[in-house]
Length: 338
Image (tube, rainbow, N blue to C red):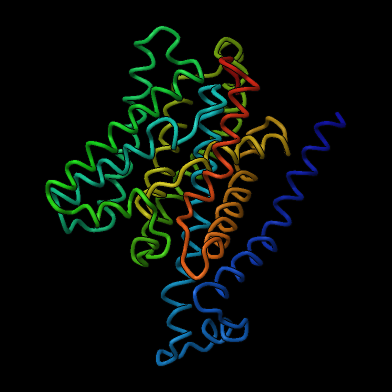
């Protein structure tokens, strides 16, 4: 009973502190970069915008859309990873390792080459289709191979399929001479967030978050094991379909907005589970907060690693994610768990 109360307190503390933590990292993100801007100027740009003021233009058209996009993407990827780990009971499950990100980027590449000029909402829908395609291929291959659905083997299959899709996309982009346009989807483009795409992404991402939250209790039961879930009257197929739909919405929206970012969906769910326990009614909202803060912090740090030049944000997430991945493999081996 004490353990349950303790995790509840931690979860509520994270949610209560989140507005302050996110406000601080957002303010730092808007103030600092290649050009430092004072907090007073930031307030003036928001409350008394002057189109002729260069600093105001930088804040309103560049830095505010950027930090909003980074916060959203961090939340989306963290929740997508948590949902995947819960329904598959695979501690290595994440959009970046299971081909979900690569599928989105692959389909976006095809759209840029063969259907240039598509409206933003269609790019988001195609990105979601790509997410489903990538996940379907990886889990399809995994089901055909002996023990292919074990955590390590599925991660290997996901890496191979992801590399294959990336290679095909790169070859197509080079042949049609759109490599520079396509490269931003693979190297992230947080520095050039499109405001129209950002506004369109919010409703699609919110759909994914709502689906994940509505499925949270069912995911907790599913994470206990297939037999236990069925014994408790769980409709496991329906839960998996709805959960994967949430993952597709969240990952597809994130990739369409800023491109591929790895390891957020792997690391953050484990950290959140350590803090708040195994109940996904707490893991999903707290994971969204922790993921948003983590990616925003990485974005801020990326500006100072090689100042005044920006380091790709994926480098920062990899510095955390790769050692964490190796730690998980070493600790758990090939066992399957939530």
